[in-house]
Image (cartoon, rainbow, N blue to C red):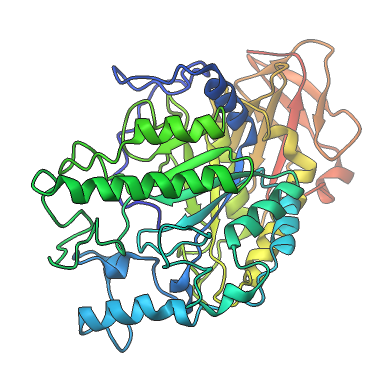
Length: 466
């Protein structure tokens, strides 16, 4: 999973778009190219996150079972669970059996485009250190001769994915773990590792830490120079922070290098406040209220970040409602799918993507390129604002609600006299009348019984007033 940390307190303040990353007295981003890319980011709204690695063969949590912490997500399972050293050896030996011969990046990319995803964030390396790209810094990688998949023409999985997704017009982001539990410069095998952190005194062994910093720098440089245009550098492992055991990996130097190759690159140094946390990433949660800075909820489509054959996937209606709720509050939705060890996506994942895509093809104008508008939500109706001022009111259905109501009442907005109100997916304007400061919209019987989509219905109000 991306990062286990308590979310910062959500501030009950209206979101003002110009607060791209209001972070108190912390240093803010000032590069105009980055600010332009952040404006672009706000328009995308819907991204795909993919956690994939050798761990998918065991159907376990990614990386965390290697970590000696008494947390539920670190629990070891299977025949080696009782002996940590045997477990770690067996886990690292998964490289010798990882062979996703059914990996079809073009199919994934086509399904992602059909689903309405606008950007991809892929785990090029998780905390366990296994690299899903052809790094020259370690042999613990997908292209190693120890890995049976290394002979495939698609062996550099990151490159194959990025090329396929860009061919479908989808932007690319690199998930990269700052900690690396396979490298002796972070977890030195001479000492035991009590937790997720570096297991030696950095001040006492500065040359060892420098080797780790150089290793990290070179790996990110490889990703920024050998994998085409990159839009987002998504850095996980927020405990690698100068304020935590002196774990200063040199993010300003890394960001400068990365942006020299990828001008305007968004850098997301998760949970490390400051200039290089260009947006924040609440995990598996949706804020109760809009936030006064850029943010993106990352969440699993099923229950696990990584592939579990028996996992249960959230219903399409719930995922659509989450997307609407997040966008209405000013955020982006980064939805995770974990591929199988054979290189496939679960049938349920494809089904959810088809259903979300069908809804977005009708109602996408209420999502993409929009900004939040107070009061954001009233009852089961969420609001978004297009850049031309058009207001969309998104009616979230109840479970098993398949028929439009005869009237929809909105208290917050009222169109200008004589202007039109439409239901997206239906060509004819709807009759409406003023109701105090708000409005009532009347739905004809023929439309009520045959709505244009399921799960949520969208009213477009042109020239609205309050």
